[in-house]
Length: 83
Image 1 (spheres, rainbow, N blue to C red):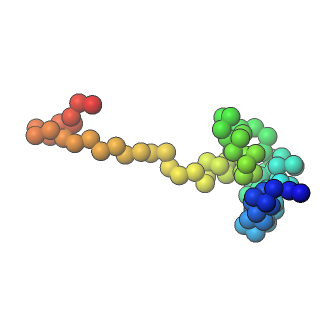
Image 2: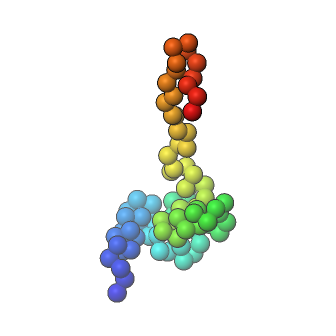
Image 3: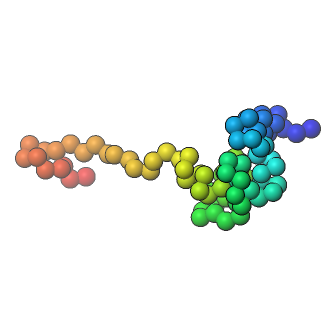
């Protein structure tokens, strides 16, 4: 019998995108946009596709922004403190 979490994931992707993740992975297509999903920039992206079924483009589009703002206090003269 199929793992219950895989069944739940297929149910979710079918309701959200109109196709189950397992079918998209079997057909090497994206569960979201339906495009071919055979090439990825990183090993992480390839592994992520196997888990969720999103192509490289859709993974990037759904990822949070990579910009991280780091607070660095200024000294009394207004210059950034050395790190």
